[in-house]
Image (cartoon, rainbow, N blue to C red; front, top):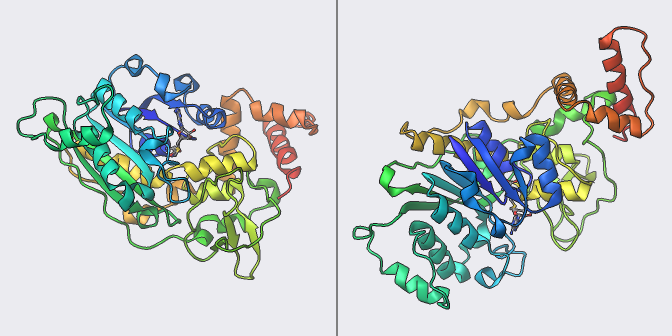
Length: 398
Ligand SMILES: C[S@@+](CC[C@H](N)C(=O)[O-])C[C@H]1O[C@@H](n2cnc3c(N)ncnc32)[C@H](O)[C@@H]1O
């Protein structure tokens, strides 16, 4: 099954959908660091670094599903909460994509602020626009007037493109993600293909931070991943007390006002508090251990904090595949949670090596740039490779 990913961020939703069996046709995202991350982890030729408002959806051709995370700021409880008056509201673009591409289904994710009482009318408007995507708003008409018109449509008499739309607030911690993260998911299935959508069942048990990142504490320094670099300066202040090591994480935040990730701290049983490393935040968001996130710590934390946890995205993707292929609902096996997203240090090192080889040794070039000594040819290829890995990791401040 094929998919178009809008507002892709660094690709949390996209990666989950890929793991569920979707083949991405295109990514549209305008943040340069998020695009860099996408290019590191997916086919770079599919990444369109541009404003969705200028994107020609027809250029993608047929897709089974349109997915994405229309920007959250208009609905964020911590933001200015202006919704439809905010030009960052990208739902009109998501609706344009559905109208033009007529996919079999769609999947959108957003912050829980979308369900605020004060936004109830605008949220109904979004749902009705997604239900009847051909009913565009006439020039000059207010969305409230348009809402009145949409509310009067009788689905039985309506012959145009129509979707059966459902929404639900889901907490990622109930789906194998070691993080309390409540987000609203909106799912639509084209009504003419008559498929049944079923939400995934929660998996029993809640994963903790300790279960997710505990292996790093006992990993040899030279084998630690390159994005596990401790950042100093964490301190507690009202409302920001960090997440307890032996519990699921609090929501990893993208942050605002230039301090992304300021709240993303771990409180250890001995009372010590420190920021999560990029690698830890990535694992808590259930990204694969070798997933590359580009940019500085702050930039990477912003991308990670914006992402849909990969495992939850995969769960939703599997349900989409099950519904669209007529196999009924299907969620992830309850005993498998997290396993696919953690690997041993040795596996991780091999994965990094494999990636280096695949990319024509870009990582080796980076090490050479930093002045790391090149391995001398004392033995065969294997010895050389081990030495380059050692040189790379020995220099890291972990
Ligand atoms: C909530 S994040 C999406 C996260 C993504 N679903 C994931 O799982 O990683 C929203 C993204 O939309 C992007 N964005 C916002 N407005 C955009 C626009 N007009 N065109 C393209 N991208 C946009 C932002 O840069 C941000 O990365």
